[in-house]
Length: 72
Image 1 (cartoon, rainbow, N blue to C red):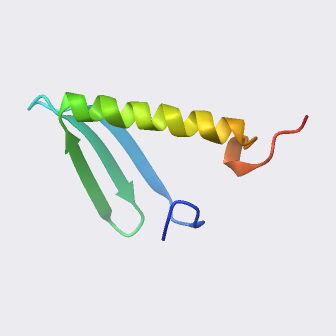
Image 2 (image 1 turned 90 degrees about the vertical axis):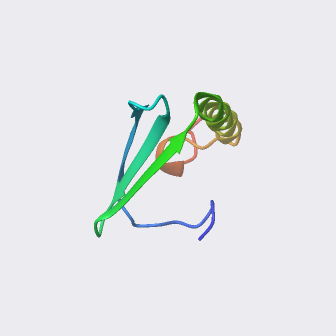
């Protein structure tokens, strides 16, 4: 599965600081899958920058919510 592969898997996402000074991205998916991903603050900022850049590119491609093309 890649970035452009559709999926029917539902998941919950939580993001926050840990007691150890890390930033945790916690993913909980169907089937009891729990995936805690810890990053140091610098790595978390890099991820945030990548998310912003990807959002900007997606917006420029004309994709609206749920990948539906924007009406003009």
